[in-house]
Image 1 (cartoon, rainbow, N blue to C red):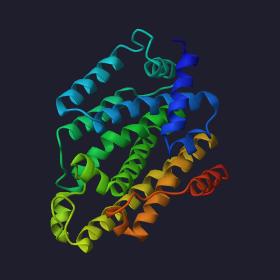
Image 2 (cartoon, rainbow, N blue to C red):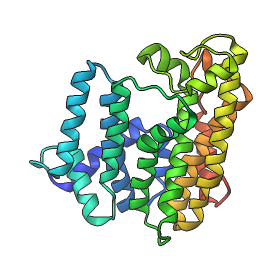
Image 3 (cartoon, rainbow, N blue to C red):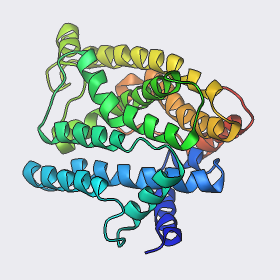
Length: 280
């Protein structure tokens, strides 16, 4: 398979599956858009293994296979995602080792890891989302020494905390996972599985939301270090998630009974603001 076919596959996957990220990715120039679509496609593959069907043992074996595939890029040339990743890595300074961090985070999920403190949860978020921030930065490029990767990592944590709040009910009921810190649940009088008195769980939700706000505040400092297209892409992605966080903060009890989301019109409006250089 040639690189053009491989990129086409990744772009189609991203357009159909990346419901929030696609609004930002489409703002990039064609070369970077293809590269970030390849990054998304491989990250999605890893996530789907961790969140998909099968025993923990089989998932761990498949994650180990992805880790090995990354060492042998592009493999036999038949896998469009690996072909696209290999070509992208030859064009941009993409830190492929960050995929290993994403894999490690998914392995924690397979082992049923819980998180005692908020700092423990942040460590997990850095693995599964800070890694994506740093991978994306490799496509964007930024001449800012160590500052840009740190800010990309912070922004990734903010987005993942928002995801965790949005998916509390789904994670618990469908996968038996609880990401909210055990000590915070105990302090507010909630059960370890994030059930119990609604006011108690809502208290934890609002606490984690306020912490996520702090990560957004710092992470969005990345925007000033990027060229305008990369800045618009990042602002659109972050703006959608920050508005989602705002919806959760206004009605925190809603995540206990439904999946909170933004309409297409809201997402398009955020993307338009990003293009115009307005704060997300």
